[in-house]
Every structure is written in C-alpha cells, then in structure tokens.
Length: 344
Image (tube, rainbow, N blue to C red; front, side, top):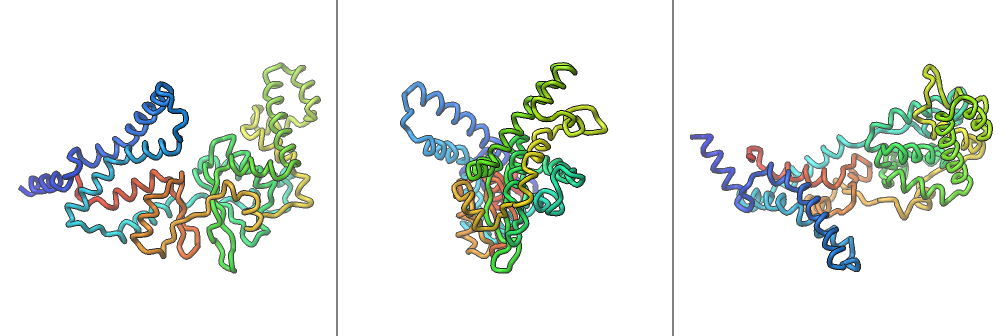
C-alpha cells in the first residue's frame, strides 16, 4: 500500500510531464542533436542564412531543456508552489567546489628561475603530464610576480594541442586577499592573444611547431635522411631531447620541449603577469563574471540558470571556489529541486 501511495504521489507530482524524471533528462541531448540537425537542413533548404545563428542556438537550447523545466514546474506545483532555494544554492556550490580545478605550479615549474631546458627543466614536462587529464586548471598569479608570459604560453600551447585542460581559471591576490577570482578563458584563446601581443613569442611558437613537424617527418624517413633533416632544423645532436630515455621513441611532448627550448631565453628578462596585465592581454576572451555566494538566493539561482556561458565560475566574498559547465549547472539544479523520492 505504501509503495502504491508513493507511486501515485510521484505520478501526481509530475503533472506537467507525465513521462518521468529520467526520460526528461535523457531527452535533453537527443533534442539538442535533432533540433541542431533540423536547423542546419532548414537553413540551407529555405535560404535562412541571414537569420542570426545566436538566436537560433538560443531557441534550440530553450526547446531542448523544456522537458526539464516541465519537471521542475511539476515539483514546484506538487510542493504547493514553494522551492527551497537555499538548498539548491548549497547543492550547486558543493558541486562547483568538487570541480574547482587542478592548481598549476607557479610558472609551470616549482621554482621560478629554473631553466626550462636545463637540469631542472624536466619539472616542466612533469607538470604538463599531470595536467593532461584535468578539465580545469587554476593559475594563481599571486601578487603579480608568480607567472611570466612565455611560461603561460607554454601551458596554453600544450593544452590547445592536447585538448586538455579545457579551461584556465586565473586567481590573484587582490587588496591583500589571496585566491580572488580574476577570470577564466580557454587555452586556445589565451594562446592566440599571447601571440598577437608579442611577435617574438609568436615566432618562437611557430618555429617550435615547424621543428616538431620536421622531426616527425624525419622519423619516418630512415636514419640517413633523418640525420640530415635534423641538422637542417638545427637539432643535430639533440636526440636526447627528441627521444628522451629510457625509451627510444618520440616524446609525446615534443612540441612543448622544442617550445621550451625556444622561449628559455626570455627567462633573463621576463614579462610578469599581474591583474592589470591579465586584463590588458585577455579582456576580449576573459570571462570575469561569477556567481557570488553572498547574493540573494533567488537572484543567485536565476543568474545561474540564465547564464549562457560554456562555464560558470563560483565565488564566496570574491574568493574563487569552483567552476562548472552550463549543462552541469542545469543538471545539478534540477536534481536539487526534485523531491528525494522522485521516480523515473
């Protein structure tokens, strides 16, 4: 009898969406794909090229999440029209905290002043290997003396080539308080802006990329042609760099090793990154908006659900606490809004 009551209650609670919570959640990505394909076909067939892609994308996303919104409305209706916003806020904040990101050692290597290509340079590649599996990394600018532009270039070049990490979050010491949120951006955007700001860095990056392509070509050409090409590339006698021991295979971080070699000369007179320089370099691509924990619960949740960015940063009194993708925010909010016994 109790199970029957619970089943009846669950069905009654989903008055606006009778197919269950699981169906609503699973339908979202399906609708996204179907609507996107339909829009692409209609745009070509009906000559809708002048229609703004931004508005079309917004409409597609809105229609895709409609089942989820109907489930939420059902939950609100079944609870007498009230929602525990504070509970949702706590749940979202906790979820974002779990995705805070992996902290990057200052300047990639543990100690500034350690050569990227000298005896301590192995720390650079060790750090890059550790970051390869992270979705988000946190670069702490501290008081403005912790990071150099050419070291950030190395991090962003590796992330852009490997596809991970997907997001770089910047924190800094502001008004004497450490760990303040300064913004986030994608590695590809940061890499492009760094090259545009400094032709010398752009030249070093392009040279390293070209050398890496040449080394990979030489690898397939046989010993004699390979030796000749390595000499032409200025890499004669550097097999230890391109084929690090103990294995005699090409380094998976060949591009980064060659780039580290190319930018090592900037260590003698580095360009440091403080918050003003961060903004000067990256304002067009830097996302500085964040959900502040001290804001009113209703306004906070509204901002979380209406934010159209790929990622949403979370702060508490200005201190960075975490970041989530937009889809993860919507999913976590939905789960927090639903009653614990909501069935499928």
